[in-house]
Image (cartoon, rainbow, N blue to C red):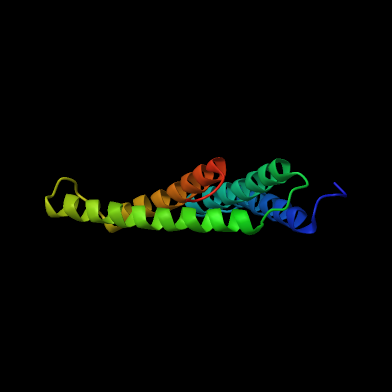
Length: 131
């Protein structure tokens, strides 16, 4: 534990604190159930993502010029593909193929952008470069 960078320690600690606070809120306070669920999930995601990144990277640097370039291209491709999805959703709404709500559309776009950015980044990392 001594050779772990300070920022990883802080992120792990923050994730644990948020998760434990969600458990305590659920156990001792009478609030809307959504609040402890969000706290527990957020803490768990921060904790797991930090631990996975720590074990995956080992002694390698987190960011260098190549990874920054590939991440930027991945986000750009994701943004362009999201514009296509928005266009498709406009046509779906125009022809009334589905009943769309603002919350549903925003949720779909949010998850689509996150997933597609990571898929493109993963693809470019496996490929080795952007051409």
